Image (cartoon, rainbow over all chains, first blue to last red; front, side, top):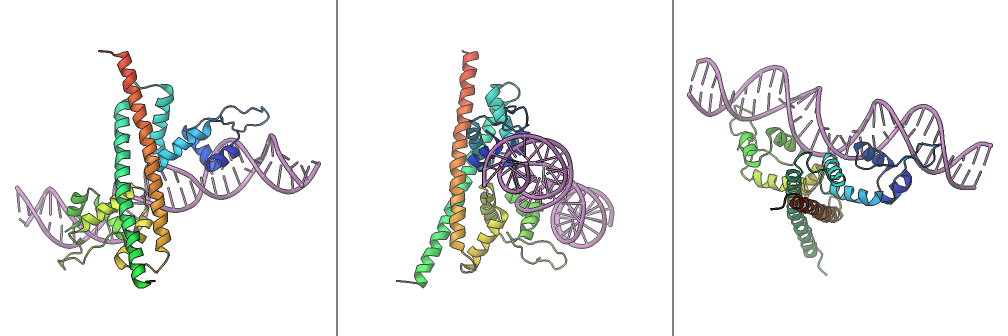
Length: 124
Length: 124
DNA sequence: TAAAACCATGGAGTAGAGTCAATGGTTTTG
DNA sequence: CAAAACCATTGACTCTACTCCATGGTTTTA
């Protein structure tokens, strides 16, 4: 699949895909046509990218993702302390979830406070 | 309370506090001593900052926070469509929580896969 | 087959959120 | 009282994660 198709599939811009590839988050195969040098992405790229966008939305950095994906596919767990790394990121995500829930609660309270006050001013 | 105390209390650097103040997220009172121009923060500043750091950790931008805090304290709900704004941010936070949970699951799986494989290689 | 649409590379530019350093006042402390 | 610790301002700097642009080759389409 070429970059435009993958972009359409994932909602990520071509530039972002090229950027992610340069960062080592995704890989493309050598072009199928030798006449051009178009990137040729494996069909399952969009699943990998879904994982990546999830993790990014959750606040993991590109560096974190590179480390993780690298380890996961190479099964290489001895290079450095993957265990500690995972524990750290897990703790971080738990913290993000907790803070997001607190903040969410606050926003919902604010919204309902507004609705209340609206009803006061405009009964019926 | 002076900036150093607030910094110690919140874990935010003095620079960050000054930066937040310039951005309009927090306010300081005029200095108590007229001989200096030290910032003089109200005692409840740390609670406000706790809310701010939560929201930041959850992915809300400083701009968002400025808008929110402004509205909340002025009760000014007519200036622009606060309702739509709140709905947007709420949806955003729900999305963040969902993606963080998916990502968290992935990391936990990875960790337990490692633990498994460790037990295979080093039984007893 | 020519225009439109797609792709590549390299490098510059941007936005957001701090962070740091220089310089110079004020307070606290031993 | 002198040194250490604290504070202020300004402006430059960093880092992350894109995003845009210029230039030029390739494919698709009307």
